[in-house]
Image 1 (cartoon, rainbow, N blue to C red):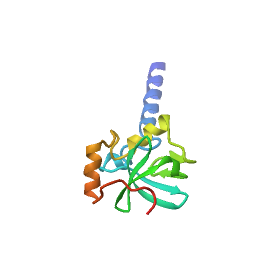
Image 2 (cartoon, rainbow, N blue to C red; image 1 turned 180 degrees about the vertical axis):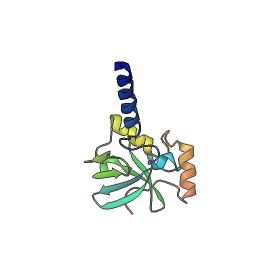
Image 3 (tube, rainbow, N blue to C red; image 1 turned 90 degrees about the vertical axis):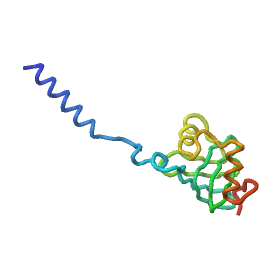
Image 4 (tube, helix red, strand yellow; image 1 turned 135 degrees about the vertical axis):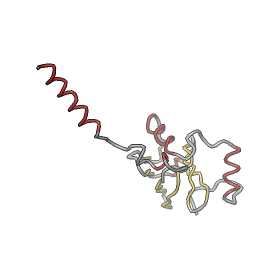
Length: 135
């Protein structure tokens, strides 16, 4: 009898907890369903811009904003907020550690944008070079 009650309790607990999901799941994550990175909202001293996160680079964020491929240096980012995550960038500081890794995985190209891909991307947007944060 005691074994039966214990088994019943374990089955009940397993059933109740299997239906619970905490945090962001793949079903809700845009990059898991579309070939796109998350949207980032960036504040610089002179401008607010919003766009798709393409790549997280050593020198800044590569984004597509207003149909322009831009490299926004970390030194010019007062704050950056990323959709579907609580991670952010503040005070002109590059992200590091686990935050950097999470943001990298949310970009369109988590493996990075090499020279050939960058050239093709710029050509697709009618550019010969990256633009900065300013209009």
